[in-house]
Image 1 (tube, helix red, strand yellow):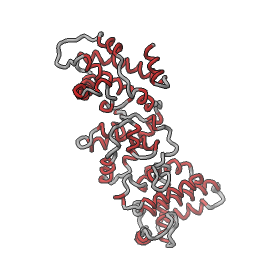
Image 2: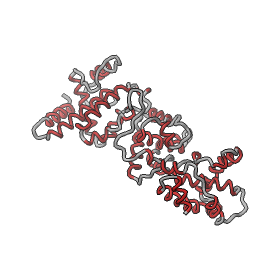
Image 3: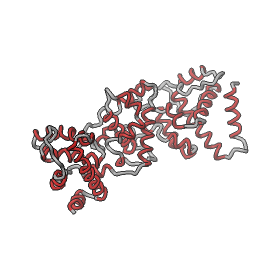
Image 4: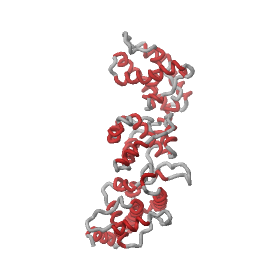
Length: 398
């Protein structure tokens, strides 16, 4: 018998012995059963590589179980002893990994299951069993396995996707435009891959939508609508998951999302939905704009805009600072709704002036930036303290 199988047999015998606490043994065998089910579903992804372990018989037995006409529960062990030995060895190797979540990741379904070659119903069956027996599993396994098959959890047959359980943030806490710091730290590989065909803004927007979907459930279109993105969620995530599959790491983006979700949950949680809601029709008050404009020293420059146009562009800039949203999704000013010419000018000005302000190199806009940022800070405090747009208006008037 191969050394690895001998060691596993000894481990199992020890678990069954009087020196092992009953709770410890029970949790180990429940974990082993759950992981064995995943190993069988996704075979040969977790095929043991130990020398002397012959898995050819296991290949044959588990290939036959993929027949959709067979009604076999995913956790039902094969009758063949050698096959069972290979499966248990694979499961034990995974459970012994220092990073269990990473070890389990290759056994999870990919976002788009069609090319994966694994019938979604098998993962759904496994998840049903996990939810039934999770209280008997070890805490370590519960923490690592909670989100393995969450993409399949739905409210009923043909129903909408269910939210992840146990999240430490809500959909309202996700900024519509993922902070650049998080994107650079956790999405570097995707940034390199998509800098040409898939821009950084799209990557940040997409990641925010996926974070919302984890907490909200439903679809990416619903998540996009929740974030105020007027794009109906179309195509969100498709280039990412396609690239990950080509790299042979379909779980890569999910692990990046895990890291960003942890960063979000450990930060000060902000109700961005509340901010977007209260500022949906907001505009920088004319009096406030005139106080800002009066402090600016103007010099002849082709980069000056008319006062009215600069006012509308400044409104968009402040809105992005308070809501952490994108310039292109800033609310359309009331003045531009019935004026196509002004709307076209504003659509361009909000990007141009926003770029000059953030670049902080053009002297005139260098003067403007700290004034707008100070107003954005004041507005943020007022919005977070207000319960309604009426209360916000009263607060800003005082």
